[in-house]
Length: 371
Image (cartoon, rainbow, N blue to C red; front, top):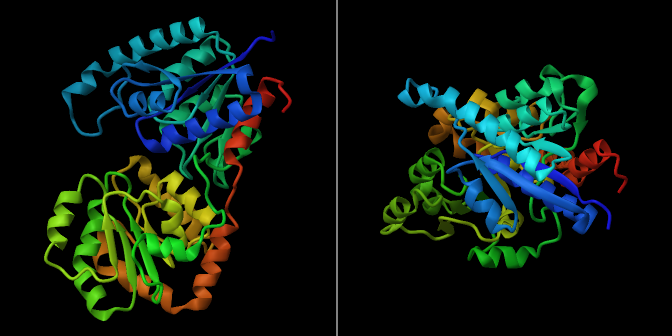
């Protein structure tokens, strides 16, 4: 029996790091079947420690933590946790017998990728954002290849190492979806433009404040219908806010269980600009207004959004101006049929539908495995 290839995938802290790694694992399994063994490495106490095993993969947690940007006593323990994480990462790599280690960003990937580089194990990075994260920038010098989703990443990484793969996504996007079924799923008439506003699984305070400020007017004027995903964290608050209101033409919920239906129904999407969200919106080709979150490292959501805005593929409103300006811009977008068509064409032109397979191919080529 041929020796199985052993691949370590590391990253975590947020879904934006975890799910590209999982999508890549799925692509590797498609390519090699039982010929590959995959081990995830994440950070103790973070969401990957629950999400990854639930998907059927083994994971090892390291005690590494991120640096608090505010003054915090917990920062004093950081060097000790990093050193302990490095020792555990080295032991994990040795015991697993890793042939390659792949990092998907976030502080969880730093110890295992650094340990791999010191042990002579080849490393590959995947950078989801248009403004590279600190961890990947630190690891880039000794990485073999760096998979990116945006142009002009030579600002951060050696040009000869860059492979343009896009962001690996789980699930199917951009396929054929029945439009009538999509509208019916949300109880919408389809006689008016539909606006989809999404704030992520936990929700976005800004997105919800936008809806609170404009809900009554939207219903009274009756010019559009809305699919409003308010997130788990804010659900009770938004339910109470809406209890005595006329919600004609408005679907509201904590989660959207059929995002394919939501995208199909939407005329315009209002969204944060995390890397995975941007990649999904490119694949479904929806005219989008981005409201970048200001609460992320290196303001990378603004950089992600502007990468599309500068190509005529999206619009943007600053978080601080969102309540006042969001629906003003959305109504302007809807009124301009030619502009909508241009946004749709330009954002679809940025889509990469086989990103996970491209990242997997890069990994296998480094291992000199032809698939």
